Length: 71
Image (cartoon, rainbow, N blue to C red):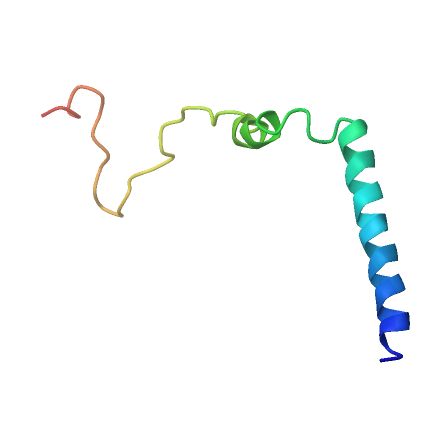
């Protein structure tokens, strides 16, 4: 029974701290925009430049030219 005199105040202090942290985060604008950071992570990279391969894909086999690519 005496353990409740330790656990109950500790639980109230921890709950009060969590409530204070949540209210402070909301007031500082932490939760104003939830969508932009997720989209920004996807759009952050620059597109790779289009380059032709340096050589043939396999030794002894020539890479097709632009006119032969569709044939």
